[in-house]
Length: 437
Image (cartoon, rainbow, N blue to C red; front, side, top):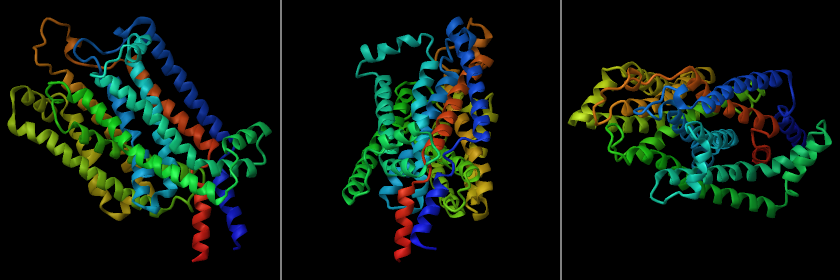
């Protein structure tokens, strides 16, 4: 096969999914209808107040803040794959970088909306910016989330510029206005050595800069909990504990996206079994580190058994939250680690099932961090209704919680239909280097 023919095939393969199809329209219809239903639940919450939820004086965060922590956590995967692995010259991760960046941007952008959904008076969010104090961890959180969204957008866009030029030239069946948009966004890309060098330097600078910002975003989120004296949150390791947990959920999300894109867009030649094997090993690595922090987080207070900590640990290990706790630890962490140590389980279908277990377990893990602790305050709970003592989410609350998940799916779906999810220019350069060798 000649170089030209090979290049044309690569471009055709990687641009094949940028088109409207019946399956895409049906999927978008399902997501849109589901989102409308969930937004109606949020309308009811705005109209009637937080009384429609299961939140109360004691458990005042519940599913909403569990969801926020999960979204912030999963967004860190862009930093891990696109920045850390790139700087470490792990070339196997290159085809997966854009998938990771899309997931990171979608989760980070929606994370801010999750916070708004937790507010009974969302219009008061402006007070954080107008009257915010530097001593407040909430101000820190808003700041780093905003910065991370901006950097993630640049991190997705700048390496995409050469591919946008290819889109404007090769997608000849698009309407003229769509091709003009691609041309405009490609910023007069000519493919000169100077432009290639500028893209390379800019991407590397962003990769270096995004690492401390990404670490800060979830460390600061952990400080929202750790800067209290509540049993279950009064921990000095919450920063690294949250960050490593973020890598676990993010890696699982990328594996799921890899499988779906590979199957839907016929990308078997570009997302291969080799990539699933390598990212399966990465998931084992980050899961082992997370397991280490879990042992520290629970075994140390369980050994000391201070009064408040003892009650909290007992409820997790053998009390009302025991089933969820052990299911999350075993099905969402321990068993996936064991299975992924064996190569057959790092094949596409088995690793998809394992990644789904890990991602679902990651969400429930955040629920376990938030809810049981708030159900166990230092002061005794007395002379209050039963629903104040035991937190039970309402149907409206569940609907509002699902809404951000649908928004993420919408963002990922739309982006995957308007930009190449495998970097074209990088793939062409790699193919050219291979031919020369």
